[in-house]
Length: 223
Ligand SMILES: [Mg+2]
Image (cartoon, rainbow, N blue to C red; front, top):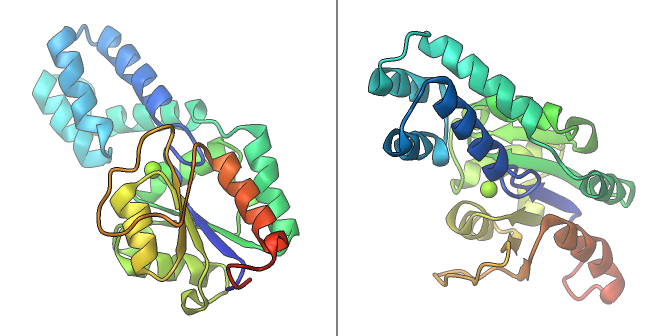
């Protein structure tokens, strides 16, 4: 199996939940939203946020700023708030020094996902970033994994690894794409389903350590 690893971005390499909660708090205070409105606001952006989301938010709350302005403010907040721990960045560099191709496959618009990758300092530590907008399909569609591999100059048909916190998007999708999988549990129990992950780790650093040490365990996975 070739040394290709594809990482998810949100809540895998970076924590999205914390910066998102901070944004909801700040936005609610700025626009004097009550507790019910604040809960609905979180529901608007919890799964994904894109320019159209802010059209809906503007209409819902009768806000004066344009949807484009609201989107740009959200984009700026997330880009400056999302961080990747230094030891994870170092882990990505160690993988590349060990001969791994390192890609990110992430669902979302290119504008915000690339802004987060740059803002968190990840861009220089990976070979490629493939967003669902750029790929034209979202995870768990196999095409996005193929495009992430191709962006690294390798062929998905030769295998690799998918690392992420998403059960369907990352684990079921990665497995269907022929990849071995590491599920980032964050302490959650595996919910079951058709395809179990090959490995479960609490966080992404443990997953990186697993990849770095697996070849020295006697090549049991066919490295
Ligand atoms: Mg995720």
